[in-house]
Length: 371
Image (cartoon, rainbow, N blue to C red; front, side, top):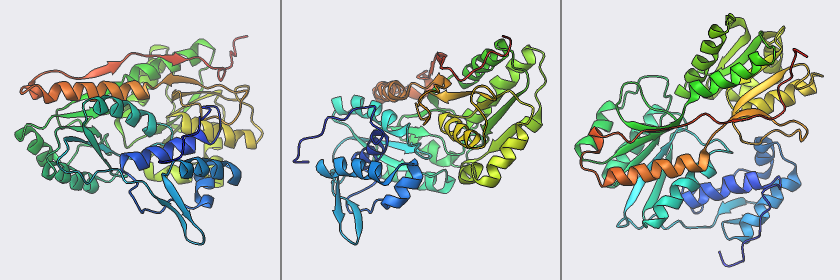
């Protein structure tokens, strides 16, 4: 990267795309010579204009991370140095990377490992259990010093028990982030999802909302925990949970959730509701955009609460009420705990779990209907 790095303003729209691509390249998820998605695909993925996409690519090219080839496409031009097999390294397994989450979490992990000159070998399962098995084998064979895992389809019992047992037998410490498996005992660093959901639901109730819809993800533990907090809060307030007002989805359903047909389904499902809880800010932003396009006003017609504090909403006048996800700090905490585990021969018998306390960003997406 011979050219001087540009001073990026975090408020510029293209920074999200820049951070996403830069982290994938520097972490080795996208490797030297690999072709990037086309400008048109990036426009659709991020809902950006062609000029915004090109602005992000210009900065990446100036930093020597990508190279454009006329008539062919854009390719990764940066070598991570991952070929240094003698360097001490840890494995990092992610189920998939959310555009706004992965760069900050990875940066937190990297900030800790860099101080110890420990490399990070990243693998993304794309929510496929079989791929997780392949990567677990890879990290065993590469003699990883430790492993950080975001569980794949974590709401279900995991079938790769024998592979995880190998890590214990080889004394390779393992710690989970975001979630954990119900049938495999490892420590984890997570949000208190159920408590966050309870607090968000209580805010809606305190503002007079009783008919509350929700969108929850069913193939990861976070979604089930967020549903649990939602249901417990309504029960504690003597409000019935109405299944007809809850939309469940999985990772593979994401692309169809906000199609024209999908939005029509959501419109019918939330008919009669005054508020909606969404699984995360990405869903909240898409819902706000889709419903606004159909003439609804947020929060006048629908109050919305969410998770992650990702600042994704395209409406500058609307600030989501959301549970703050400690992205960078979560990465740092997991990395620091893993380092301690690597020095502890009894790591599997000691407690290295951590739960971040509830932190709610108030925003202005809740209407007080008691007034």
